Each structure stands twice: as C-alpha cells, then as structure tokens.
Amino acid sequence: MASARKAAAETMERTDAVIEVLDARLPEASCNPMIRELREHRARPCLKILNKSDLADPAATKAWLKFYNAQPNVKAVALSCKKPGDAAKVPDLCAALAPHRGTRLKPLRMMIMGIPNVGKSTLMNALLKRRAAAVGDEPAITKNQQSLALNERMTLTDTPGLMWPKIEHDSDGFMLAVSHAIGRNAILEEEVAAFLADLLLARYPALVVARYGFAVGNMDGADVIAAIAGCRGYKLKGGEPDLEKAALALLQDYRTGALGRISLETPQSRSAMLENGWLSVEDCPQTGET
Ligand SMILES: Nc1nc2c(ncn2[C@@H]2O[C@H](COP(=O)(O)OP(=O)(O)OP(=O)(O)O)[C@@H](O)[C@H]2O)c(=O)[nH]1
Ligand SMILES: [Mg+2]
Image (cartoon, rainbow, N blue to C red):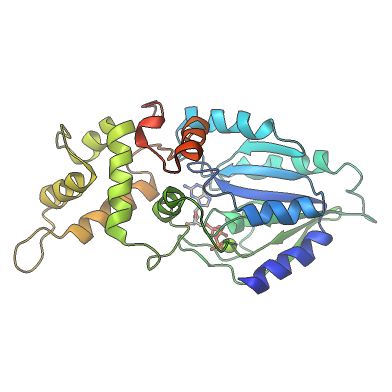
C-alpha cells in the first residue's frame, strides 16, 4: 500500500492530467481521498470517469455528473469502457484540461488512477485498442504501473488500484464490497448481500421480483437471501437452506447486471449519509429506472 502510494506520488509529478476512474454505481464511496490529496498537492486537473455506467441507474448517473462537473479543475463523464468506442472521447477531454501539452516535444501525460476493480486497465486497453494490461473481476489484478505511448503526442500510465487506510463510513465499506472493490475476506459475504438486499427492497423492489419471481411483501434483506436459497433449491447436506450460496448468487447477479441497472448511492443519499453517519436506504428516491 505505502509503496503503491509512493509510486503514484512520483508519477503524479510527471503527469499533466489525472484520469480518475470511479464506479458509476457508487461514485463517492469509490472515490479515494488519497488520490485527491496527491492530485491537489500538484494542482493537476482531473477527468473523472463514471465507469460501468451500463450497470448504473441512468437517473443517478445524471445527478452525479452534475455534482462532479460543479467541482473546480474537474470534468466528469459517464462511460462504459466495455463498449467499443465509448472511451474514444477521453484523450480529447484530457487535452482540453491541459492545453499547454500535447506536442511531440511536450506530450500530454495522462495517469489512470482509482480504487481496485473499477476498470482502469479496461480503459487503458480500450484507448490503446489492444490488450496491453490484464483485466479481471477481482480486486488487485494490476500490480505495477505501466506507461505506454498512445500516439506521438500522448502517453498513458495504468496504475494498481489504490485503497486508503481507513474507510470512514461503514456503509461505504459495504458498497465497496458489493461492487467487489474489496476482496472476499474483508467483510462477510452474507452481511454484504443482506446490505444489498435491504437497499434493493427499498429502492428497486420490482427488479428483485422480476429476477427471482417471489413476492417481497414485508421481507427484510435476510429474508430475501433465504427466499433465493428456497426458490433456487440451494441446500446444505442436512437439508437446511445454503444461505452462503444464495448470498453469492445475489451478489453475482448484481455485479453482472442480471438484476438490472442499479446505483447504490445518489448525491442526495450521500449528503443524508454524511449527516447521519450511515446510509439509510430510505434517503434515496426510488427511481425504478432500468
Ligand atoms: N459492465 C462493465 N464492466 C466493466 C467495465 N469496465 C470494466 N469492467 C469490468 O470490471 C472488471 C475490472 O476491470 P479491470 O480493468 O481489471 O479493473 P482495474 O481497475 O484495472 O482493477 P485493478 O487492476 O484490480 O485495480 C473486469 O471484469 C472488467 O471486464 C464497464 O464499463 N462495464
Ligand atoms: Mg488494473
């Protein structure tokens, strides 16, 4: 952790524009305060990419873009780096942030930063139009920085995912685990799935019904997981429901988008959370958009 931070600080010195990749479904929870510190220390402009927007609620993403585009020295766009061509606008957006660079003598040096598993290397590959970096749905796939020329006037550096030492709000920890930015051992899978199920019940109940086919009535998150075990026939050897398997199935369905386009926070839920110290699932308007 400390060495990755040190390497990032060194590269920051030689960077003209930071491309900060966030998860569009949890933009602020996936925003590493350390990255902001490093960037502001050198006064570097930032292109914030709300990536995986194909998985996020479009209404929430729209609100987040407004939120970030009001910040100084920041430009924000929503992308899906998995869609061919979606990333193509990134170099021009960075060039506009650092107009004094971008010649053969003074190439525009872009550094891709972000927490683990948000799609930094997928973006790097999309821009280079080849598989220069390994990618995978696990945190900490990229271990070292990698700098490559995008063309004669631009360079790109991919960096390992950076976490920060203390996650201040528990609900951020849960959101990060739901999105798989935090690995399997960090938080109990069943607790993470119950957090997600509670949030789904409050904001996107129709998507739960559509996916699993049971009525959600007065259920809470733990009931949803038990019901998934029941309807899928997940049982332990003794015949009891296999709740762990059901929890994993729910998380998997969320991560792959099988449940629909679902955001875990909005600017509104974020400000209520900062006041209360905990993300109340009620604080977020139910958009129900899929
Ligand atoms: N649905 C969707 N999946 C994406 C998108 N971008 C990346 N992914 C997936 O997210 C996972 C993580 O992608 P990576 O590019 O390895 O993420 P990273 O930020 O480089 O991760 P680390 O190197 O571990 O820090 C992979 O399974 C990608 O296929 C996107 O826009 N939409
Ligand atoms: Mg990577």
